[in-house]
Image (cartoon, rainbow, N blue to C red; front, side, top):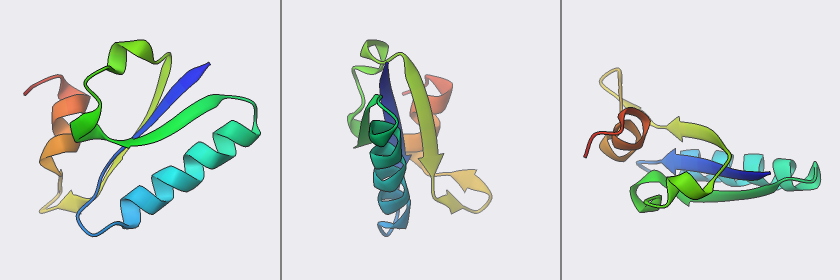
Length: 72
């Protein structure tokens, strides 16, 4: 199964968490890739998603919210 571990990060910590999650999924036998959500224009090629974002003022960062809601 192809899994996208998408992330939106302000200072890098969310990216680090996404990379560790993708590594654990690969160890479990899945094809997982951590990518910034702003670059995930080919989301339809994945069968499953794990999405994470830093939070600013009680909201996801813009790239995270865009992929999550489907809005540009």
